[in-house]
Image: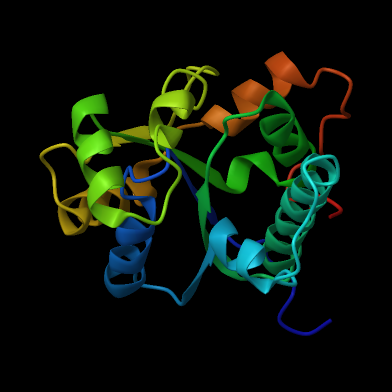
Length: 200
């Protein structure tokens, strides 16, 4: 296919709810040199029918939504598009799924951190998140412990974070955090050949 020879870069923003991921992503679209797409998981949840889902059904529906989101991101990147992903790795399987689907050398894993006190203040001010959501995610989201670059939005603005990430891209490490996590957490997966594109 013409124009699909390269794999797009995935800037993977991971942090709790209200940590500032979406705000950083919007600024990244302004400061990045190449065209990029912001793909927030909230947009995928918003696409779902508004009918009420029973508590028994909800976990399976949410899991399918996340799985579809991961595959949509992988497909966009496989077609050569640069993608800014807005994610919450609060369940182990989400990272494991992404490690299988994404081309690890082309993922820049960004830890978006914020103090718990500030998260709780933002959550209350927003009024559109369940009370205590960020606190429940706080320890789990960063449990894998490895990033290419981290930002703390407690004091830094979204624009400052976006500029730091953009400046980091030309000097990102080898192996990437995603490559190291893939080796550690998914040893069952074959090692892709150099330049190979993961199948979404």
